[in-house]
Length: 187
Image 1 (tube, helix red, strand yellow):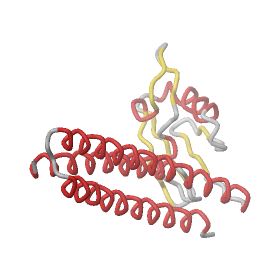
Image 2 (cartoon, one colour):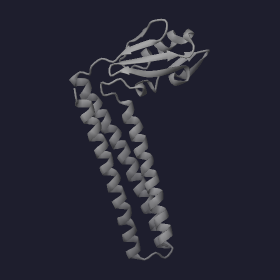
Image 3 (tube, helix red, strand yellow):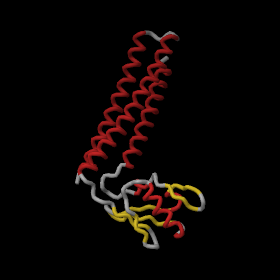
Image 4 (cartoon, helix red, strand yellow):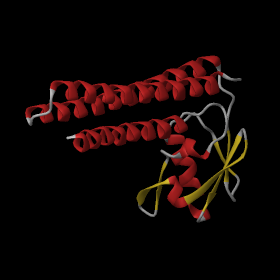
């Protein structure tokens, strides 16, 4: 039975790791006033008669803390890339110089920083929901083992073990969100 409990706890950890990975990816997309190529990750470009993600038609690099450069693999799609960036509604103004597209990242206003901070907190809450769902699934599996002959004490111990893992991951989420908020609010 102990192997089954370990398997249940490990499965819960894997699900919680997935929630943490998703949170990390979402937080990277929230810009903190610094140029980051991931800011353009959701941009899609219409080229050659179909919609393609920006990273399939161009290379995006950060020239410095305030400037992104988009180098198209084919210069004929530069105009479509600029349109895609504008349509992504990121508040960015792409400038096409015929060779590549330069994007100056404006400094964030206090109001925008607060909005981004709220967005980061919301992503943290989504991650916590995923973690709690993993806990619920693990506890449901433990209850099934109880019906198969697991003692009451073993059930309590297993549920306590799952709760400890849940608490650890919740603290990790809180730390990630606090660090992101600090990053966003730093001028």
